[in-house]
Length: 590
Image (tube, rainbow, N blue to C red; front, side, top):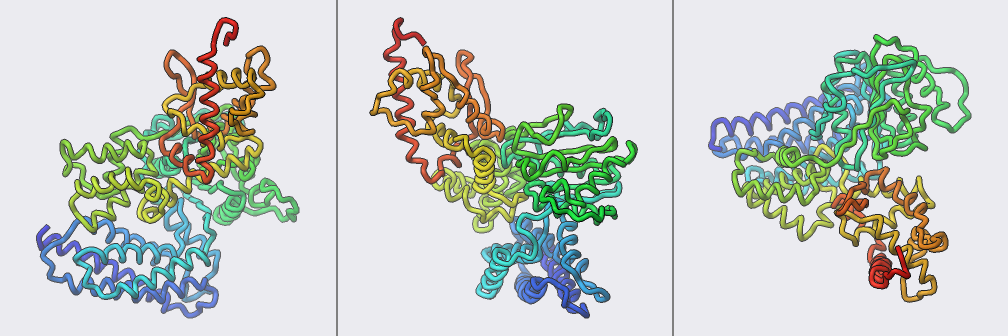
């Protein structure tokens, strides 16, 4: 774009951020007593002049620029948004009249973006990261602050990793009195309306709240969908509470803050029990929900309730005026009764996936026509249309566009990287901070594997999943296990068949009587994989039932450190199947 509007947009964007940074610095400088302030505020404050200096130098050098690249606009906007959040936290925490406190900081960090805790060191690190990306652009490359910027960013990242000012797995609580808050809804676009409808319409009996479980594979955008619903329907409720149920520690913290924000009087008894349901704050909050009248509508979201040992049934709010939404990777949630509804979230359809990729990358879809659309289609299909993977891919493509604004060439380069360097590309978290997700494909499914191994220690579910990645994932028929079990039971003395003990347990040769396979252990091993969405039941050719798995689940399982050791087991298993088919006669019926 030529000068004029483009130049004005660049300069005004820089000036806006400079003003916000300056205001944040003045808030800190005006505080009379900083003794109660977390020390990270001092660290962030000392880096504010660096940010202002970089932006001012960029503004001065580009005062008369004749070109403006719209591709840098998302980075400028991100800088401005993070700067505003930083200013808001400084303003809420630092007071010229009162000594600042950790509790005030914790509350302010959650209130800026409901659903996410915004630590000041993370905000400053994000600002510095964006400035570092902007430095690679030709409009900024003359700003001589690269070393100073790298040093400041390194220091912030060190604080973020080694001395975080708030817990790493933060609590996320939303409160509303009817008007609600402006929520960060993320990028999920699946049709949640089909289940939730236009608002709370469920019939409520006795003291039970209306219940909906949003379930699906990790990375399908469950939390973003619920945030979107809350944003659209927050005015239907008097009170909205968002609880991070990923761990008992987070849940305890959330309930304590909930009681504080709702001005609930907590019981004065001493709690010697380690059970979360016996916590005074939990009991006070549950009592509050039960006492609400039917016309006093409340909504509680239990987010990431994947582990019933961390979030037991007894902490679930109940009451005639309530609606409960639970997000969980576990399909059969133990937190709801049989009156609850379930919404299973799967991969996006092609149009949704393409739209998400364009938004995440900052690409205008109308600029791509005809054959050019084949590239983004191939990218989203390669990522199995999973929202998390697509959002991270879009953020990475957006970064590449800073170096080369040729959209088609950049898409081609990313797809080539995806084909040739998929492992490091999907493991890296370099783009996580630039998308609406704070996790990667690697971390989200690593936590799922860990949860399964913790909850089902005596079941070789992860081993079976890894083993099955050698098979055709479109339909792995249950019949194959039956055939191999029957053949193995007939040849127990075969030493040449390499079968590990966990697979022997599944085939259960000792329990296979008269060529009838006892598949109990096989079914019990499959259940966790089905429950967490890592595999799905399908009907194969000729109605043969089996399972299938998501392509990226297959990729993640293949990254297990002992993956290559499963090949011998797979060869032995296939040998049994082929031998059964080869030797089948009337004397050896199925």
